[in-house]
Image (cartoon, rainbow, N blue to C red):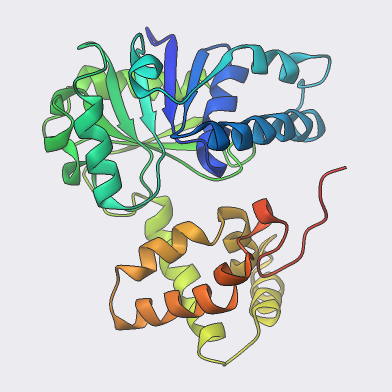
Length: 287
């Protein structure tokens, strides 16, 4: 069991909204924070869509259980109000170090001393952020995979300063919200999942950006040759192209070239992945 009952999720993008909804679906009181009312309006639409997704894909979600989860979610555009009584704050803001650092500098003076801070960063180490949290002993990473209701891993990774009891509390919390906890015993950029996934996706993007093969054909080869259910560009679309673009933009020359290709051919054209209705593939709106 876990003593965590009230959870605040900072950021209501694709994955942030999933984390908030899954947590509420599991019986926790959740505050979903974002920077503006417009962003919260978009979050409301994502939550409504998640009700339909859960009812269609999650066993036991019909009969009103998914709808009930909405009643446990409070939306807020005021950071102080959002974290005022939180036992746990899960940060899921854009994968840009300066944005995350600035947020933690504000957050440390607003949340109660008891509050645990967890970052859902895909690639940054918690050590990159701990000095800005004001509570390095109560700070660690809690990393989820996209389509959280289906790919239900939660990687837990602390720093040398993380209190072991806090680490154990996050492992228990992850289990309590239906995740399979994956304790990561030492800091590792990319954790377990992205240490495997990011090089794979980058290799696929390099093939397409370099003109060697079309994205559809890269996916076809991977699915046929390995028996995998999805190819790398289908995975890109599920993740959304913005996060990979942000990561690649801060990489080496090859990575920046791939980022420029993504921006010119997809992002600048509004092709951001499943969430926008089109990425490498076109998606029909949910009925």
